[in-house]
Image (cartoon, rainbow, N blue to C red; front, side, top):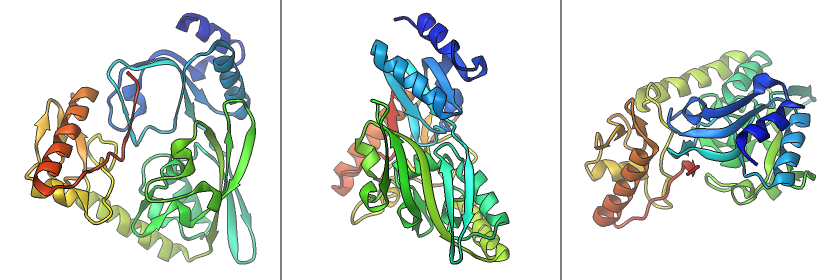
Length: 305
């Protein structure tokens, strides 16, 4: 089935505003890099999600799931089949006596949620207020910063299998670890997340959020396109420190560069291709292995062809 046929079938049930053909993936990643997706569907509700997955199943169409594209590198030849961009953004706050239970669509943006929780004087999410991306993506990789991780606040996660069956699992069943969860190795779609947080004072919550953002601005190249921290931290070493010690700050391949501000970030200086980034990260890995005798791993996810 070609992309024109796929588009026409999707258009029978889904608002045309949410379906794009030959969509440049660089518009959907914080790296501002990536070839074209055959079809991209912005998933605003579970009805559209079910319809899209059913179609992919019925015609054996490749299916790729993304969130806000903040931890993603899409290859230069793009993505075949259907890309589902999960934009389920429902937020429901239930205030109990000692804490708040917050039920979230997987597409809720961390920054949006942080501001809402600040207004409601709900604490404990400050660590994630500056993490780009969505709740679903944050759960997928157990995102963390400033001493907090998603595993500290998640109550349960609901996901859909490719056979359309829906399951809800507890925090423990998520198998959270450093930048890892059970979803990292499962071919499923996170749809909803429930978190549990304590109450706090607005001025203290805001102070923490402001301090974290100030630290990000001072230490990270947030003004340049990137996918955040490029490599995982080692068990007994700080990867960015090793890259810096190898003299790689400012090292470039094409338009991709090791940030001069923070060696843990590969940035797009304006015209980088995905291949530039891949070649640069491979070079960094080899240099760190050669000079520091440490194997380092990517934190970013690479998709496409």
